[in-house]
Amino acid sequence: MKRRSVTIALIAVFAAVLTIFSSCGKTPSETPEPSGQGGYDIEITSETKTSSDTLASTSKYSSEDKLIALTFDDGPYALTTGKILDILEENNSVATFFVVGYNIDGNAETLKRAINMGCEIGNHSNSHKNLTKCSYDVLREQVDIPNEKLAKLTGSSPKLFRVPGGAYKEVETDIGMPIIQWSIDTEDWKFKDATNSDRTAEEREADIKAISDRVIAEAKSGDIILMHDIYNFTADLTDAIVKGLVEQGFKLVTVTELFDAFGVELENGIVYRRAEKPAPASTLAGGSYIVKSTYDTVNIRTEPSLDSAIVTEIPNGTSVTVEKSVSKWAFVTCDSGSGWVSASFLVKQ
Ligand code: ZN
Image 1 (cartoon, protein in one colour):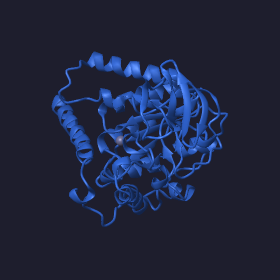
Image 2 (cartoon, protein in one colour; image 1 turned 120 degrees about the horizontal axis):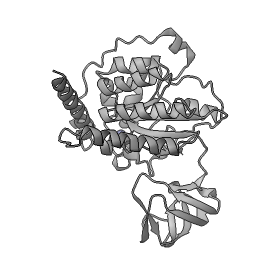
Image 3 (cartoon, helix red, strand yellow; image 1 turned 135 degrees about the horizontal axis):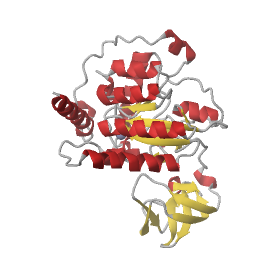
């Protein structure tokens, strides 16, 4: 009986994942509109409703506190998001959920619970499209539909956007909301519980320990951690990470609470990786930087333009020296050569 329920749970998670990723290549007109648009039976407690005019609660922290924001993408999904909410609740913690528009329908109760717990809800597009490959009209739908759905559901629109696949190049301004990336990637999706996985329970435990140990060792106040609330593996990983961070004295807060505490005002069209103001690309100071990208490698080019030739590719994490910069581009040198790189990939060392 127990084994059967686990199997059913795994199939359900797999179906949820398929729902998200099977829609990636479709235009909105090809994908049927979800049913149940005619109003949700949602009751947000009056305490939550009056505490904020947005989906975020007001910060009660300062930058003196050790603060971290856990973020979960691609849900909500009742089973796994529910488990994650249980863990947060047990540890007096909150998180930010970047939800996909198509998953809002049918998971309203889970969202209601998250909001009432003080969690923040952000927008992660309507059907998980790569926004750098969409027309402007499709991009608008991808941003606006979840905002409208969430506003209808809760009475307020999300303040934060997370781009599908971390891809925002050249569309930051079009999105028109603060874009929240991350400073610590758990890479939980690589370890998700695939139905055909032949991993033993011991190997799974070892993966959870290795990831949570790395995250806890790397964690600094102001960091934003990336996870996905559609896998059972992530729920178990969350348990280890939350307990470890709380033990180290961290307080787990929402993204808005984190930026409020650090006094960083979130601006539309600006990309944030942690609670600090990103250096404007046009005035990137010379000195040592680290390449930080959602891609494995970034291109070094002959000119400050995407049309110019590639000199070399350098891996994420490479140390470089910035010699000079022009708008959005920096001229860098590193062990494997010199050339121009998009300044958005550089983080001050
Ligand atoms: Zn995603």
